[in-house]
Length: 157
Ligand code: SF4
Image 1 (cartoon, rainbow, N blue to C red):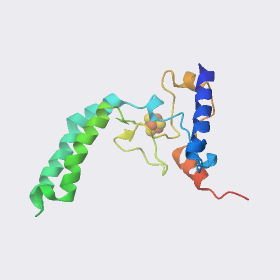
Image 2 (cartoon, protein in one colour):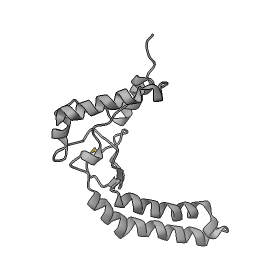
Image 3 (tube, helix red, strand yellow):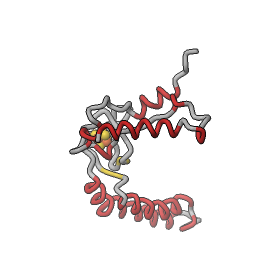
Image 4 (tube, helix red, strand yellow):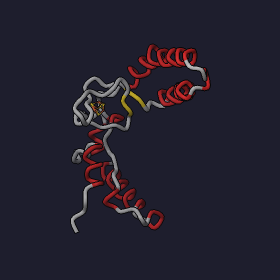
């Protein structure tokens, strides 16, 4: 099983470096095996509750207030963004793309916001049940900021 996982990663790297993506430098490929999606602190249930009980209502109320206070009304760009954003967030909530986390920290050391994307990763990551087994004790992934630094770092000729 674990062998299959590694093999899949290797195959993915090979595929990304294949003819189809010939111009892609393998050094610029980052494959993630960890993220909030597999962290014990990530709660999609809390996020759903917060979104449906509070945040969604506040956002829609803000849209109404904005529409009433601007000459463009419902056609104001900020109002349109809210009208478009709420159903998008509904769908993302259903797909469990957002969660709540009480211990996560951002690159600048501040706590993560109310909603954290399932693809985020911070140094407080703790594998949820099954996550460690799937990774077979492999070294931790680089944090997003570390990965960005690696990808952008100047290569020594
Ligand atoms: S923000 Fe950090 S601690 Fe929170 S769920 Fe994501 S990886 Fe885990």
